[in-house]
Length: 109
Length: 109
DNA sequence: TATACCTGCAACCAGGAGGTTGCAGATGGC
DNA sequence: GCCATCTGCAACCTCCTGGTTGCAGGTATA
Image 1 (cartoon, rainbow over the protein chains, first blue to last red):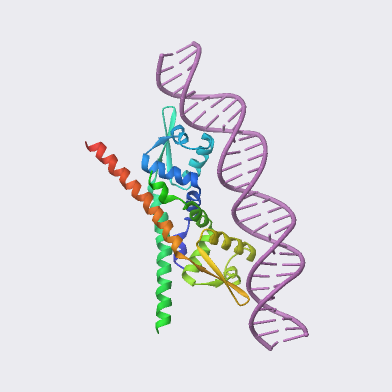
Image 2: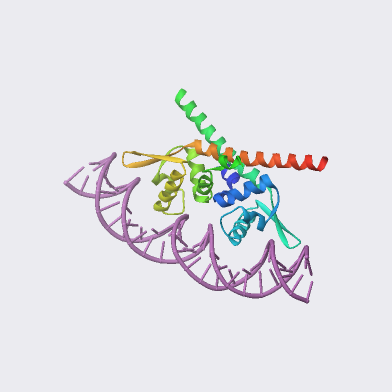
């Protein structure tokens, strides 16, 4: 099971992406660039504190990063972890393709 | 925000993948092919009921499917949703690349 | 300096997630 | 028929999550 090593530590990233509010935050940071908490809260329907918590969850998964700029805190995306999550899905898909190949080889022999 | 349509309904899939036990189940079903609950429980450290619940969560996200075969229930992977999740990550990454391009264009002018 | 704004911290709450146990119902093999 | 095995259902428990509110502390600006 060499594939398990590829999946190691990927679950937290998926868990971070597994919330619609957070997914929207990621998408917004991705398309709109870095933004302050107040600006990120403006487009949402929940409280600023809720947005703050979601941002911290995303930061815990390594997906975003923040820096204080003046009196506001600016959050920006960190796409490396995103790439890693995509690679994990690729790994699973590759496993699947191999399984299909094995099945086909088994049927055809 | 045309990207939101691409991300619509993707969060449940990520949430389903955001648990290590479930991720291992997906990986196992992917590499080992369909298996019964008892067989899936054998390699795990939690109860059969816990595995059953996790399988139902995965089924709710459209990632797996089950069928009764004799006295046992056989679960198998359904890779279409997995592909869709990968495409969602691709969409976000594409957004990111476009944002980088815009930034570069802005800097260079 | 006074004021408006942005943020951080803490307490609190309802609901869901993950997990277990116990028991009952089917199903296959002897 | 009898027994072992596999599953399904229900109750229950603990802990985390998403969310809110209130208040205090910095920071820009008139």
